[in-house]
Length: 267
Ligand SMILES: [Zn+2]
Image (cartoon, rainbow, N blue to C red; front, side):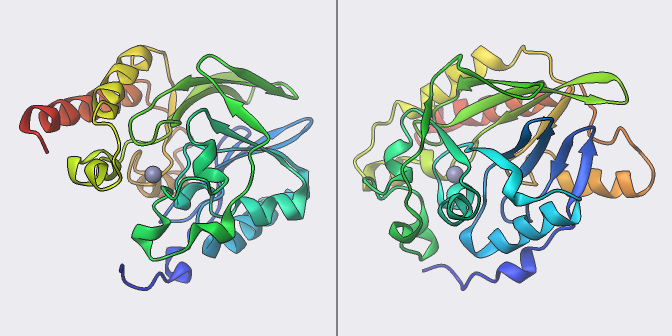
């Protein structure tokens, strides 16, 4: 049993990353908001215990959670979809998840990591409205999102690609939806009778997306892309704190090399 989760200690100020892209998550799990002329897109809802912060953050930025049209999940773990059921009841937003994680979301498979965190995911289970496959695209207003299958961390982990606009300039934004090795350890996989090949799939998926041009790399956890450090830079006046065309490749290359080490060492 993990130590008691204290959601109030996970607070982060919501803020504009650039243009129509905003951070509305917390320390434990990131959520991102994309504003379009037709409504809002939310990437990940976070822990159910932190949902009040996401909702409050959306209001603080001058938006209404009732304008959320799409909720997209980076993958099917508790810390990314735990708030979804309540948010859907509040807003009527449509939900999306990568193919392979739908049974995590709807509670048929008890693999959301809730158990590891000391919770019962059944309370937060929901049936996703749309299942995303490699190469799928969705559009809301002027924002088009493209998805790439990026399995490994979970079978349905996705990478997300879209453009934002800031002062007339377009920026390519991307997220890799799950790089934690915790759910790819042999110990975890064997405990649940899962296939070991997710590790090689993780590496292969990185190879398929690593060469894409990306100006702004966002993470589904703040430690992926130093969200806190960059936010401090924004506060200090650097409007381009999140713009780094080399970061996507650097991050994925590191993840790939570390996983290849794990495979070689049989961890
Ligand atoms: Zn996860």
